[in-house]
Image (cartoon, rainbow, N blue to C red; front, top):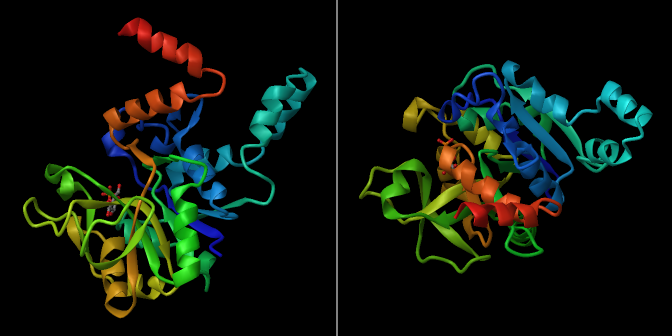
Amino acid sequence: MIKKAILPVAGLGTRFLPASKSIPKEMVTVVDRPAIEYVVKEAVAAGIEQIILVTHSSKASIENYFDRNFELETTLENKKKFDLLKEITEILPPHVNVISVRQPQPLGLGHAVLCAKAVVGDDDFAVLLPDVLVKDSSDTNDLSLMIQRFADTQASQIMVEAVPDHMVDQYGIVDVASTPAEGRSIVMQGIVEKPALGTAPSNLSVVGRYILPAKIMQLLEQTPKGAGNEIQLTDAIAMLQQTEVVEAYRMKGQTFDCGSKLGYLKAVLHYGIDHPQLGESFKALIQELT
Ligand code: G1P
């Protein structure tokens, strides 16, 4: 089973300025915790045990967040604030560890994934792009369904969702014979990064959740610069798909693009109304405003 997940967090978050000027965009708060915690928890809920952050020198606060903070813990203990102490020490279960590697140059998503090659070794792995939050529609999360499908078929899994036709040029887009039902996978005939409007093979966009074989690292080493003059993960997946079956998995849950300001506000609304303690009061607040 897939136990390792790569989370590329080295990007400077220009879409989220000024908020991301001096804190990582991944640390911007969604309700009462940083956005990155939702993504890490999604991975852990799917059975991931090792989180590999591909990071940048300006992003140490992400690593600090998943580390222990002895001084804070001692202070909370002395003040008998045991609820808060539990909250900050139980962000991740003890069997999950977080490792960081650096992406020394901003050469693209494919390059970021390649930076984790030595940590991944011979293991197949997941990739989760932290700009996008994926909210489950039911008890089973989409990533765990992809992992199960990979275990059953050995076919790489690329999570997709339908987007309006005028937005296809912002995403990786897959080529499939037909649109699968939600929660189902279909063999992919191709994948292209940010196609020009009117040229896309479908309106199924790559969400930013992937289950990939270890061998994709060798393909990434050979991948030339593509869209945006960057080494694209999409292009390595296109190469992989020349030699073996790669499947598009159509998600059941809902996505929030926290890399964009409106997507972020939408996430705050949705996660806010579902929050176990704040949800009811937050709903009342929204009603008051409308
Ligand atoms: C990346 C991927 C793209 C994917 C998108 C999802 O692009 O390259 O295929 O659709 O994430 O958010 P980026 O948004 O980093 O330009």
